[in-house]
Image (tube, rainbow, N blue to C red; front, side, top):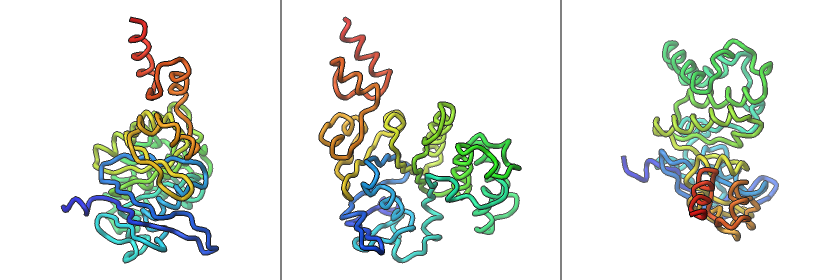
Amino acid sequence: MNPKESQIELRHACFRYPNGFLANDDLNLIIKRRERVAIVGQNGAGKTTAVKMMNGLHKPCQGDVFVDGKNTKDYTTAQIARHVGYVFQNPDDQIFNQSVYAEIAYMPKYYKLSEEEIKDRVLEAAKIMKIEKFLDKNPFEIPYVIRKFVTIAAVLATEPQYMILDEPTAGQDLQGIRILADLLDILKEKGIGVITITHDMEFVADNFHRVVAMANKHIIADGTARDIFSRDDILKQSKIKKTQIGGIAEEVGLGCDILNAQEFVERWKKTER
């Protein structure tokens, strides 16, 4: 496959809402399959609008968006969504079936897969998200955080080439965050690209090598997590914060480039020698 046909590309992409509000302005971004990219920035920076252009929910008013070489303007949202799965921040905006099994099975049925294939996909997705015991439950009668895992499983069952996760850690406890971290590794093994929008900088630092920072409708930086969290100008403009351990490290004089506790300890030991 041509490398340009195995990536998402925003090329001078702009999006304006019907009321005239310009949400994204001249976005240029390439995300390759198998990549894991976090998009960060304050509320209103344009993050959600940008990723909705990636899966065809929004079509750019100027510029173009390509998914594996296909211009989203030439395809329906349903056609693009088969390649780029979107997990909404609020699971209640996504769930509409009366059982968890039916929710996960809905799109595979829509694609007219065999009953055996549908069952296999549902069970595998449920196993990955640790929700097997909820398959017979009404999704609206289970805890909110579990409903979020149901929506992830529903997208997993479509076997997309890319997955967009909107604020996946919101409301999650430590166990839930571990399941999400394991999910990212599984998606990597499957060759599925991941794009996440999140305000959880610890989750970003622990799981994402590449970070795209947005502010005021634009992409203002695109680099490694270490690069982004080390630059005060980017942090200030995008209104994001360092990880908690990174902030402590800087305060005690260990430098501005520490991302996690392990790096903190290693740097501390070196200063003690």
